[in-house]
Length: 198
Image 1 (cartoon, rainbow, N blue to C red):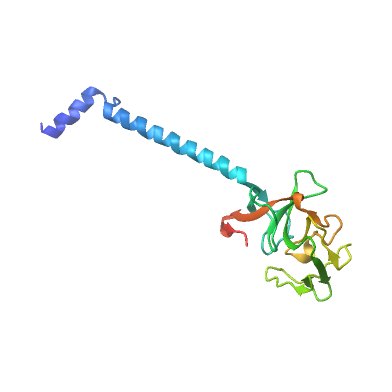
Image 2 (cartoon, rainbow, N blue to C red; image 1 turned 120 degrees about the horizontal axis):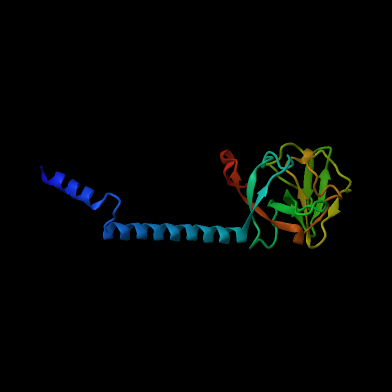
């Protein structure tokens, strides 16, 4: 019988389930590290959810930029004032705990004019360059143009202009800044579209 056979026999005599003090210490250390990693992950997730909230896109009003069923992270903390072109979550007036996803086109004091025949949008007399649109803006609502956005409000439109209810309709109208819940910053589902929101 060789030395290796003796060592195996001794291990079997000691019981294969028994741990040496070194093995027990190593296992405890590994478990402790795993618990710290899990705790850190929970804390990071908690901090993340303080600054961001998950949001689901419903409908086609933001196509082709965003599609029905897209899941977004909306930055809620540290987002104080919308800027031109921001995609924002807006409280829905007619549905509690629901929101709409729209693009900010104009801010308080701006004058918006829409030429529905030509499908063009002007802000303060300047034609908007809108490469994100699905098609030109031909759908009118019950708001008469030109309009000047009141102070403390913004004017929002969907990117899928002819299939969107937005500030062209008095159902939504001008959006008070306090009704903006945050800015859409990241799409996390579907995975094929994973990445920042443009």
